Length: 163
Image (cartoon, rainbow, N blue to C red; front, side):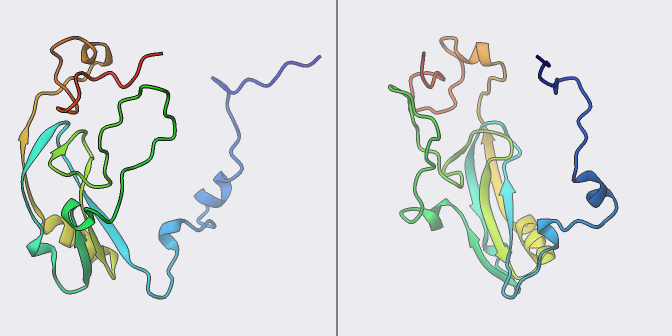
C-alpha cells in the first residue's frame, strides 16, 4: 500500500500561482459594480484599553455614505455567534465594533462607508479615538493564573471553558 503524501515540510505546487503572478487573475479588490461602496475599519492600536473618546464628526465628509460606531449598531446587530459552544462555556458580549473597551490589537472600533476607496481611507484617518491602556497578559499560561489581567472584567478569569 502506498503511503499518503506528506504536506508538512513539503513543497506543494499551488495551481493558482501562475495566474496571480502573471497578472491574469482577478482579485475581489478588482471588482467594480454599479453602486459599489467601500468600507474601511478603524482598528485599535492597543492590546487592551478603555475607549475614552471616539469622535467621528470629522469623518462625515463628501463621498462618505455613513460612519458607524457601536452606538449606531446597538439594538440592530447582535452578538457574534460561537461556532463551537461546549457545555459551561463563558460567552461574554462580543460585538462587531468595540463598545467601551478594545481587547486586542486590531479590534474594530468604527467603520466608514464611502463611494470611493480613497475617501473612505481618508475619512477613517479623521476619526479621533483616544484610549486608556489597561493591563495585558500575552502568555496563555500566565493568563490562566489567579490575579492575571482579565480580558473581560465581568468574568471571574480568562478561562472560557475546561474539558
